[in-house]
Length: 57
Image 1 (cartoon, rainbow, N blue to C red):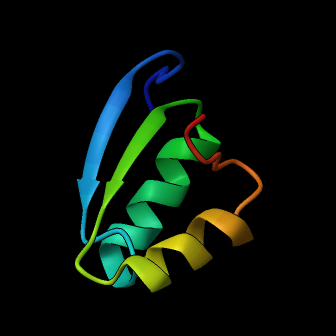
Image 2: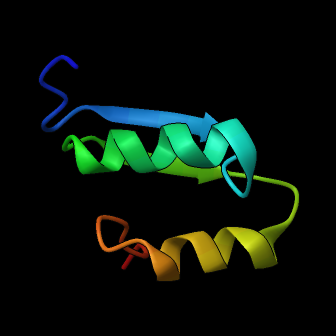
Image 3: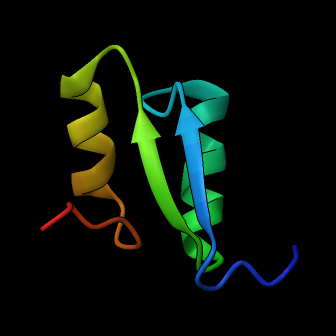
């Protein structure tokens, strides 16, 4: 994967499935990921469960 350090990427459907997997991989590779989903409860769980994800300040 390309160097994604300091890149900002928006991912829709990030609470489950392919969107979630893509968001996690992007974060693991240094991208700043903006997550979007209809189910905010699941989205919160993704952020809490993944060490590379951070809640906005």
